[in-house]
Length: 591
Image 1 (tube, rainbow, N blue to C red):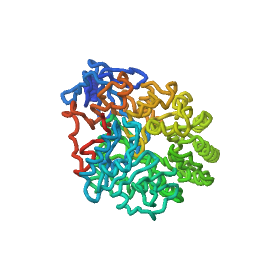
Image 2 (image 1 turned 180 degrees about the vertical axis):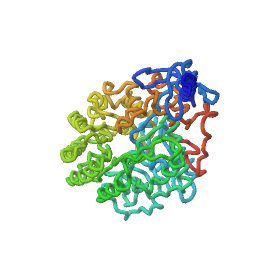
Image 3 (image 1 turned 45 degrees about the vertical axis):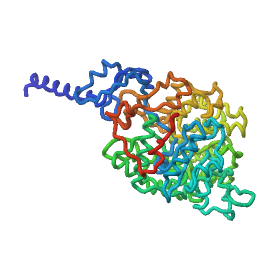
Image 4 (image 1 turned 120 degrees about the horizontal axis):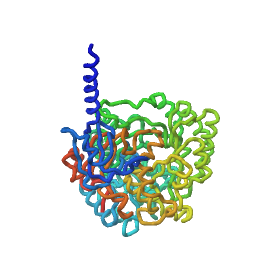
């Protein structure tokens, strides 16, 4: 072989491969791109190849990577950010019911909310219910009050109706009471109240005292959609999240969300490559007394390190671990309309059994904990287990932590844990102040202190049954300190700057689960990003909660585009069933 002749040929061959490897599938130019990278924090353009970020830079630099097959998108000066990653949301459950729900999220007047209720009642068919399930409170309304039962009954007529208010109460109209056969003889459930009038007849008000089981068990009795409607509903919900710039979610399980049966819809969509948000999920214990049996079964069914592959994409869909509910004895209900519940003395023993199993099996875990008193007892259990079976870097974190103390933050750090915080105080801040006073709300939760201690922190929403799933409300709350009603609940000194806050809702959540190469617009990172309709960094703080995406990319594919980008976006999927509130009102209401 003539080496002198062969070397130039090899050089040309490898040069051709290198050039081909630098070809972009998508190029976005003329943007104000916040990369959240340590280098090149703000750039003008970005190139995507496959499902990864190929390069960032100036228009001129990035356009060199364009070929005849490259899709070029002009951002027209819009702000571009990494896709949002909600570290606590209930997508799998929420998706199955999304098309059934009338959302009052974002509605600014009770008059409009009642009109929406009236219109939906008129079109809801026999056999189905009108339901408003979370995401609102009275302080968002200009009237600053809740609807009355008389107003609800007048608006809904013969259409059975269920309206959920935070973790505290729900209303059934007269038709709903009749449908569920609730009468004067119906007993109150444990820690719940069916309100009666002076004649002993139910009024329609259901109250958690403080256990929200009365609310959720009633909701669970309502009719479900058909299989095809659930598929459509889940796709519609994920598109709604994409519309808000969400590209990933940690699903925290939830009450009445049984594994594996209730995961069939998302299992099916994943196999077909149709999931449009990254979706690692946790398994949530469902029944008091069977928690250890459940987790023993699940740890035997699921190989925790096997994230699978559907052959279509690398959109995450796998069991991440156990929680947020590990044992029913550990449920410290965040119902600020009532005093903090005292956890039973059996909690430590029952939680230790479950957590010991998870630690030995090397299953990550998360624990719902609203109050510092609960966190103290949970940490006692975790420290005890760590002495017997060292956590040794196992992923784990506390959810919520509104009243956690500095001492317990240091204990969490010492055990290698993290914290997932949500914007629940944006919806329950006034209720918290009414019960615990203004001082207690000034750093609830103390996010700034968590970051100062070096704890990994992720930001999320805890939608959909209480707070809204809109992540921009979370960013509004954590940067302004205000509730959706405008009350200054968090002290200004405890709020975060906009860049830090954005980091918690992008790469922050991924740091919680030690997932790398996600949450930034940086070479080699997964291509998840959103072009925004308003500049998050310059708009008035009141406008933050109204931001949406113009275009959203997940795993290198365009999954959503508004009217401006409809030529490059997937076609809009028609909503079924035809009576669905989503068809007529959409999701989060932009006023």
